[in-house]
Amino acid sequence: MDDPPIAEAILIEDGAVAAVGTRDEVMALACDGVNVVDIGDNVAYPGFIDAHAHWIGDRDYYDIGSPEEAMDQAVRHGWTTISEQWVDDERITELEGLAADGALPLRVDAYLALNALEVGGYYGDWYADRQPQTGSLDDRLRVRGLKIHLDSGSGAVLYWDSATLTETIARANESGWQVSVHAVSTEAQEMVLDAFEAAIGATGPNPLHHRIEHALQVTDEQLARMRAMDLVPVIQLDGVAGDWVQWAASLGDEGSEVGRDYEEEGIEWLGRWRDLVDAGLHVAATTDMPWFLIDFKLTDDIGRPQDQVAGGMDGRGRVYPEAPEWVLDQLLSAEEGLKALTVDAAWALGDEAKRGHLAVGTYGDVTILSGDVTDATPDEIRAMTVVATIVDGVAAYCGDAQMCSQLED
Ligand SMILES: [Zn+2]
Image (tube, rainbow, N blue to C red; front, side, top):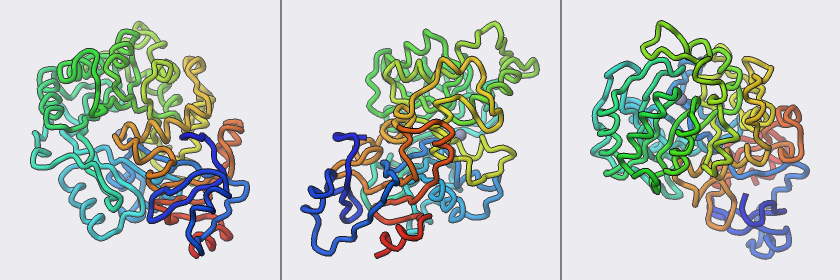
């Protein structure tokens, strides 16, 4: 995911990438006695980044008992970075304790929650005595940004009014905080676009990488504004296409505060993966763990990077194994899915210089899969396994006995 896009060998020294190139080039730069790991026919990728999830914070929902167990699941699934998207005071205290104990096997980017999931449930600017952290090689935990839940999961209820949202985003932007806003419905897109426009101007730029989470229902005009401001859409490629079948009903729920006439508004506004990518936006693909697990049960074949790439290619998800018709003209290539898990996911976290690609000076974060996703069908990608998850050059997870012994040398 850099130049060259594909390489034969990589040297990781003191946790950072020191060389990329042919085996001979890299070996010439390595010190004597360097530990050489031959990954055979497996393929190493820049460490996969789950830029919107709740692996640790919402672990109770999927029957995981401790943060250690939740992080273990994440590294087993191939993630070298997870971003916790709703972190309140209690959760940040827990994460900071884990970081202080050196107990984070992967990187965690925390987003501080500015509201509870209820109308008017603002927490105020409780972040104000903190600074957004850019992180260093030793810091696996970064308090990166702020999280606003503008509307509910299905988009049926708005939790904020426009004036409060605009003022809150303006204050955060002025203080140098990136803001990540959950926005599903077209009403929510309109409100968040207005608020970001007031903060950064109609044509950006967007140096703090403000984000729109889910961006599920987006009109043409809204897409053009998103593009003009270079806002970062963070979407889910696996499962969600199927979930929209369910959500179609709730989007038009008469009982909701924001009655949505789904049929009238047009199905073409839903799930615009291809349009977002074609607009040249940095589109990140994320699991939103555990909110798209079937019955909140995590299995070995769900919540994985492979499913994001494969789901983006055929529109199939776990809940509804058939792709809904409206997603068929929005499908992505494997390369585009891969970019959404690496380069652009790193962009969504504002750490694209250090993560999401492998080049001299980036973190030594690598995910090794059993195959090449750019040369496989979606089902072949789904069948691939995580061979190893490497963070700072050290195996956080290894599933291949022979390779594990090499990694441990
Ligand atoms: Zn979420």
